[in-house]
Length: 312
Image (cartoon, rainbow, N blue to C red; front, side):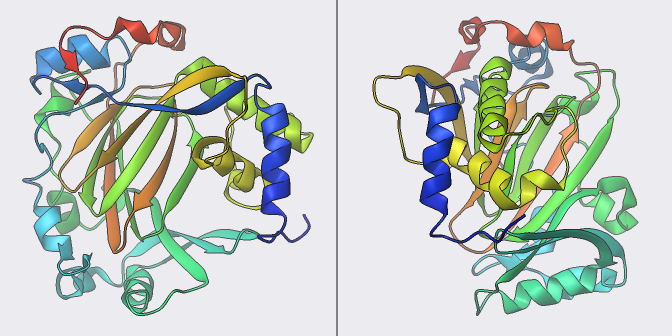
């Protein structure tokens, strides 16, 4: 793949607008509705079972020991006096360099912590990101810092299917994708904005990007191609660009910005992309809840939001 630069970005975005559903614009983002209460019954009936995204009231993750032990002010930054004791532990790291280089590797946690410290005073061209680090592979003290919320253990089949953490320094970005299982997403540090599309709308956007690239890649099996090069640029533009298409048919998306301690439910099959907001370190945890519905049930109308939801 040929090198990309900022001069080529507007050209690629223009290509995108001619392929992604040629009579639509994606730039109406409504707030993700918020549950009136965070009881298991309300969550199950209004979000989990009907597969509808929802913000949870309050800060169910605010009591996580990880929030006060892993991070510190100002900035915020990583608490190396605590996390440093796990420096020899191997973790999955993503390395990006501009828009053309992307690699994954297992490396000692200390490498990431040292890079994050340097990033406080400089803007590194090469960026590191702890992405989808399995919770069950972390040292036991770190696992204990992230206890499973009751909302997870009592909503689905009564257990936790999977859990992963993300640690980085803003700006961080996760491309448009969908997950095969429902997730409870909790913000531990910093701020992130999550944009979501219903399954059919997200598939339309994905197909448009592939058409622009002359590709027929499957949306079910995503690899490193979405993290670099032209596909990364087009996926990002499809969700985050301020450009619109005149006289187009509107496709409505949903958006939520989470602060530390806040959380939201992301149903299986819903396409979503995530961006950090502001400066400083970021931390998130995603908890997979087993027992969700089948993909066939995902396509119901967004008008199915029940009375337990209110836009705030």
